[in-house]
Length: 365
Image (cartoon, rainbow, N blue to C red; front, side, top):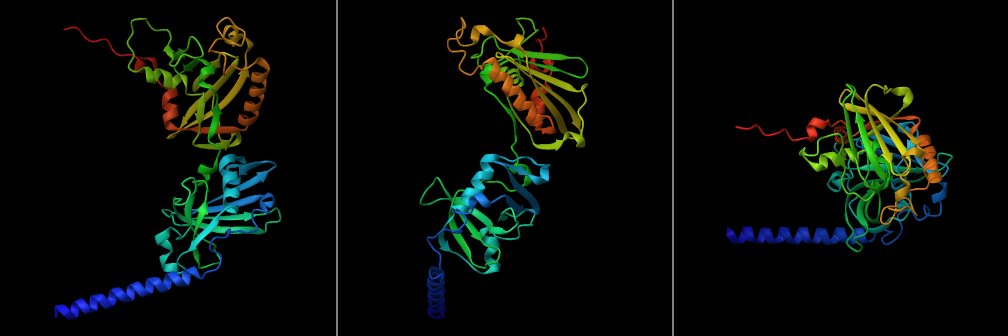
């Protein structure tokens, strides 16, 4: 009995091994290995004006307007330009490594299941020209680090009209939903430029933090006795840096929401004359904000500018007055039409109160 069972096991192993060899042989005969996935797309890349994506049941549309990409579903708000360009160029440069399964029952194992599945991993892209013609279409599933080149990745892909799947090599952005395609950076300036940040709460309470010079690494809490002990110097600096690198979770036009003047107001001023004012209000679980920039010559600290008596090691990131004026015009042009949803952690940094920053005195026995 044992000999018979062993013989059956050996026969089964041989059959499985032969099937694997045959399958590998069949796959190796599929035309295209080692070639570009979309040979003509690189030549047609300047004709691509629209990319329609579908992933996890959500549709997003990237549209090229002049030399910039915008997101249709978000009222034409600017897309992350790096991601959009990487998607178009990356799709045109995908190279076939080897064919994989053509059995639809196995698609889910490599992430090529339903693009409308809420918990799925597949995303479909359609690249179109101005006439609406589809220049290329692809479904992308699981990915892994490139074995031949760790600077690239390997993707399991399929063209929607084809049953055959492929393992391809290239570099594509890691984004699926609409929000992930937005340019999420509202403001990004060098933190050395920041001089002071003042938060005024709706009840009139004020919290102010500042630096004495541009290169100072941390902020000081103002208007407190010198012997006060802070809960955390990081809490103070979080407020000081809150507007210099301001990001957002979502966006909407000013016609769809309003932010009154009597909510939380946070004002940042710089050593070179920039003043940024953010007004925010709670809207359920989220924080809405509108932002405005100004040039204020009285804020300029000439001693830190090039040629100033304290400019050594301090002036590297400070801008000339004309450059700040241009910066203000650009920022207001970018911000004027939008209300931003501020991340919870960022709203927490801005809404901190002075008493939260200070350690309570120890009670004497």
